[in-house]
Length: 112
Length: 116
Image 1 (tube, each protein chain N blue to C red):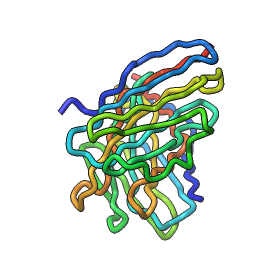
Image 2 (image 1 turned 135 degrees about the horizontal axis):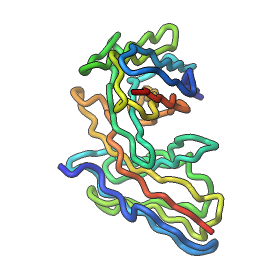
Image 3 (image 1 turned 90 degrees about the vertical axis):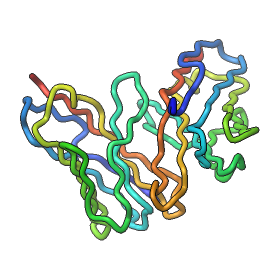
Image 4 (image 1 turned 45 degrees about the vertical axis):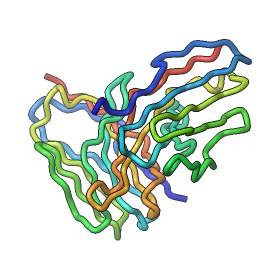
């Protein structure tokens, strides 16, 4: 059974800092890996999706990497802003391409 | 497209009552997923459909939970009878299986259920 772990559980940084969120998964046979953002009381917003054959994906100030052999993914946020404050979740998709297993999330606070 | 639509956004009910949650997926998507989010257990997949057919319901906690997808644009999750431990946020998500989309899942805003 796939297990996904995110470290740290919470992170507080000053505005402008670059930061890295970590995600690890136990079963490397994944279809893809997705990073989501969740604001308090809201649904999940998809940020980046990395296919199993890819190493990284970029969108604006966000960069996600994937290392299947080590069972790790990282989300890099450049020049953080207070608006980036949210909970970030990673999810590994099983090889059938359907079932997502979520990590517990990292709660990020960017202080002005 | 309006995205995934869920209703109601909030539901407060008393123990023993029947609860029905509704979801309209993104038009054209062929997969629909129901998730539950709690502080204790995080996000859990309850059931998912492909082309309106239930594929995996192994996450449904017990027989009190049932889900249907009568057509490509509508799904329901029913709890009968409801219990206080069912209190959670229930999310619906949809995706389209093509080589370009790689099964990216899009989530609705959720239904916050409180069972008293």
